[in-house]
Length: 212
Image: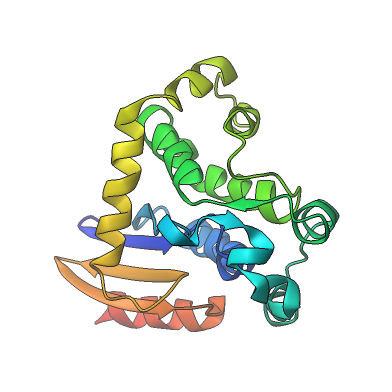
């Protein structure tokens, strides 16, 4: 089907987006032959919200990540729990993962969906620091992308500009929160989800719209 697109509004540092990862992966697997997919970064931690995880997002350590686990079935990794939370080593900053995704969109668009998953793994499984710029090339390399070239592009202003444009676009959608899926058919947009939603619910909504 042409003229049909699902846009995923997310943030690489959104814990509920990490919990939603298996659902989104399954939705993409089911519908990628019929529907175009786009991922837009939301900019959850910017400006005054940039800082050490236990200062700018104390609710995560206080139990929010356990709620995500019990609701979605994902497991936050030992690296995240020990380094990110216990040691407080993560500096929450949405700019750099969004830039990294923009680099992948530019150079390896077929790898966008897998890279989105790798970004979640980097932070919420492996406990990497989002402000460790060199780290992004390591994860890009897992998809066959040249690490050195990738790291060079992470220094370019054009990708920072693109990331900021995505944040602005996301803020204009009135979606309510992340993760969010928007289905567009023939120019008509329908918000499928705002916040964590199961695969079964999303599948029913998508099928109802496609059949209509």
